[in-house]
Image (cartoon, rainbow, N blue to C red; front, side, top):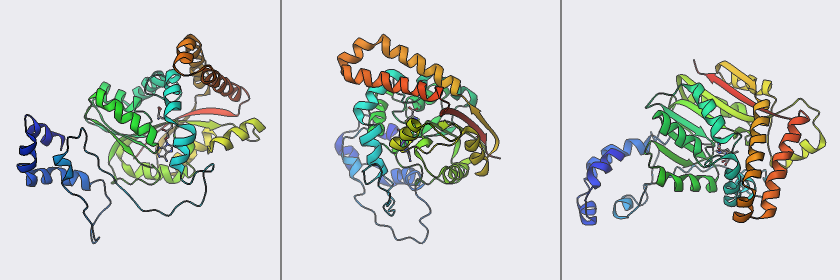
Length: 338
Ligand SMILES: C[S@@+](CC[C@H](N)C(=O)[O-])C[C@H]1O[C@@H](n2cnc3c(N)ncnc32)[C@H](O)[C@@H]1O
């Protein structure tokens, strides 16, 4: 589809694009790509709304929505009626994301930012043209890095509108046609079997309750020989300290020990599962991030406020404290599909 537009949109006037848009040829090229996003339509009745509007508007990106009607969850998330609202209004407000990336590093909102991204992505031995799914891609730092450095195609999926909005804003400057973002819930989205070479997810699955069901989906979406790489918050064995219990409940996290996490990946059908406790790396990265916050204290206070700066320092210090009591752990998981 991108190839078609490149060939047929240069120097074209609006009249040409509207009146001579080679609709048949375009349809032949883009319809299969768009329909591949849907489960099989065989035997279904389909209503096609507003076809053709994109060709007369001056838009940077074509956007394709996949909507699925699902029953509304009866569980109210922290007072919000959808989990998406909970994410966007609690943990991942636009302003909060912009604060946190100052500490994690531009484009990242997870432990170690670019440094752990480089370290972990290196384990994948990515090859140009491979297809990567980044589950919970956030603002897209990892997706841009993988595409730029290894020439892979990346689909970044995230449920937070704030995150995807920032990622798409940055995509305009990055100019990487191999990177796409999609606002979607990883627990609901469906892909054809064998759609990806790699599924990559950083510090995201802590938000997801039914990890076994999710890992089974990942297993199906990977091609045989495909690789899974996940980093995630984990926990120590219970009993937890009261402050850790309160923290987990307030955030709505669902945490497993590193060992349990690895076992669930295995139960989902993966082989060669490696489940490594990387808490020491979390502590090191957190300390580096605290030092960074200290080094840019003036800038943070000027750009945000003294209160925001202190909130960051307290959050990062609390994280170190939680690691110290043994309640908070950090896991790195690697597995393949037969
Ligand atoms: C800590 S952030 C990490 C973002 C990114 N991976 C990074 O390293 O910068 C966790 C992300 O998971 C996303 N997320 C949580 N639940 C999700 C779901 N069910 N489907 C897709 N994304 C989800 C959040 O919106 C958030 O962007």
